[in-house]
Image (cartoon, rainbow, N blue to C red; front, side, top):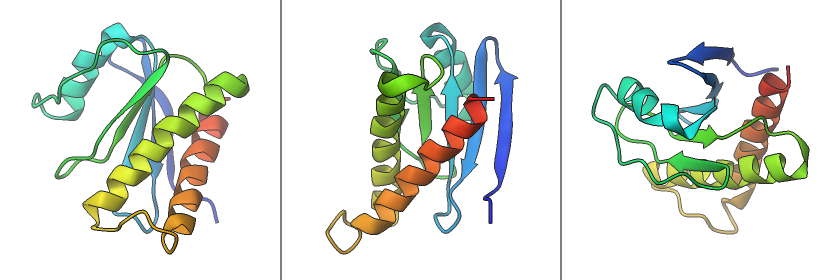
Length: 133
């Protein structure tokens, strides 16, 4: 059964967004791809003008934690093609899943790591499929 995925679309300038429904987690992960210079406007729009602080431009990606009523946001500078792009996406997906687990008061332990692994795989697989089109 394929989870609900909102197909990538252009949002606010040159950014594209893919929304990943996390199934049993009560969150959706918003993955945006495009220039870092468009992020402040996107985050203000996504968070109703109560924008969390943006880091300086990074080497290719970053993740903002979930907040009440908002799931995590992953930013990628470009399509996650090849080993480097896939590793950046995987890295940021781990941050997003860790944040969702903390929001649900789940510790990352041996007993919960399988849940985390499947959630990371779901994010990576969905984003690779959607942004690869």
